[in-house]
Length: 190
Ligand code: ITT
Image (cartoon, rainbow, N blue to C red; front, side, top):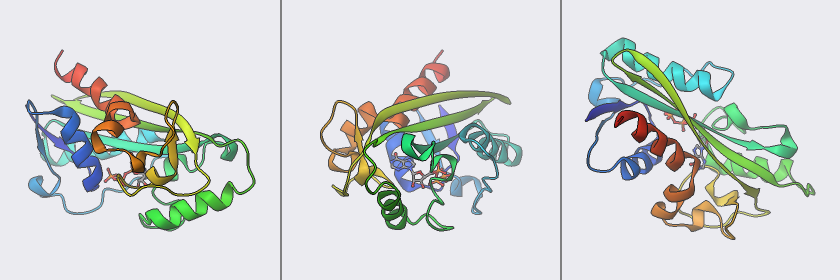
């Protein structure tokens, strides 16, 4: 099954490819001629996932899906949430985002957080959303160099190490994105 994945994030692409497996051929934005950044103007993850998928569908008419993900920290009232990519700066500066998160949580004992991924799928013009969540906590210092983004600071429930200290397979087996993609597969193979 051929499907466009509307992302410019190479880490997401490789994680999703690994979960989807052989039965799916993922087509990249570049391969369909979309080289510009898709504006993420929504106020929620659901809106942004939808905006990205629709942007691609309107230009290509091809079946496609988009992932919007946020880290929601309880003591920060759900921040950085939908602004996870642009938390510290305008760009995707992972190191600056992690530094800011540690600063905001200095001296805070409630470290509870969750990652939430919303995937918008457009198939034959019809849109469906699925979601994946992993609960966990924010570490007091960065650890590990696998993965990307906030992975060096996020310890999932039931584990003692961060996502960045796990193999890609292990992260995928318990992560927000792994879970959302498992739901996506259910829809695609129904
Ligand atoms: P696309 O929109 O092109 O897919 P993006 O990186 O802009 O890529 P998001 O808006 O969904 O994607 O990203 C939100 C940010 O959340 C992202 O830049 C990372 O900092 C962080 N993030 C997303 N998924 C993550 C994960 O699995 N582990 C750690 N951090 C993650």
